[in-house]
Length: 366
Ligand code: SF4
Image (cartoon, rainbow, N blue to C red; front, side, top):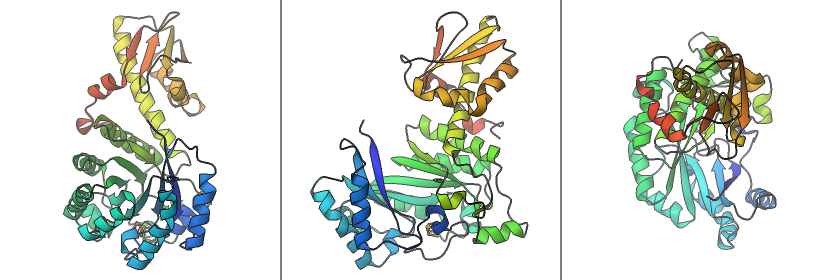
């Protein structure tokens, strides 16, 4: 499969009908003004110098409500990408927008001008969460928008948030179930952060909003990630990109920020997968003196965990004398092996693991 790359062009808050209570795009993206057309061209050319030619490339307008900016400005931005499309240097245009900011006529025009992917800021499909977060649309609007994007022949991406006002685990799982039914081609999951200068900061300081802890956010995101994975829908990002601005100590007032949030989620998924395999393997009265786990080389650090946290946890929970982890090139992605002698004895494939899960019924996610 071809690798995909986005050349991100940030248009902070451009076209947004109002500021959503949690959002501060300038601080999230470190971009303070929408770029000029000359700047867009320069950014594309600079990025193209570093992207390997075999990659699938999209120019991506993020950080605003693209389809609500004045039509002439939309077209100017799209036209300045056109030469790179015509010369085959990029393969398409991606943009992010709100579910209540599209109609069929505009979608057809966007497709005609080279738009290949639209990422919808859905955030939640729960009516109360949308209302308390003042998003300004209802769940049925999201469903209609997704249907229109499919009908226009444009690839659909969905962005979801967890930990918004009024949200809880059950609502997140239900939003995930409904999102899967909308058949997106990709998903991003963002835990809500309290960012300086937002309405959410005021609510937090007044004691009216309690953010998720990092542990809760990781556990909920891991459950959502597994549900999308079961449905063969790629999760392409978990947690905000840790821009310099976001890592400034004054920017995130509270909430589950971690510069490598997605990695923490994958470590949690790897830990649970190892538990599943050990539960099956140790049923066979195997000596617990010396166990070795085997994983694909690229998944080694996820299985070991930060500061060997997964190894320490497994060793303690299963009363293991020693627990080693070895990279094994013959294992396909997402699989895991185990043995207590010189070689690998039992394998848990990604598919077998996903089949064991009953996340919607799971009471101990948190
Ligand atoms: S969440 Fe989206 S629509 Fe709301 S202010 Fe931020 S960029 Fe604009």
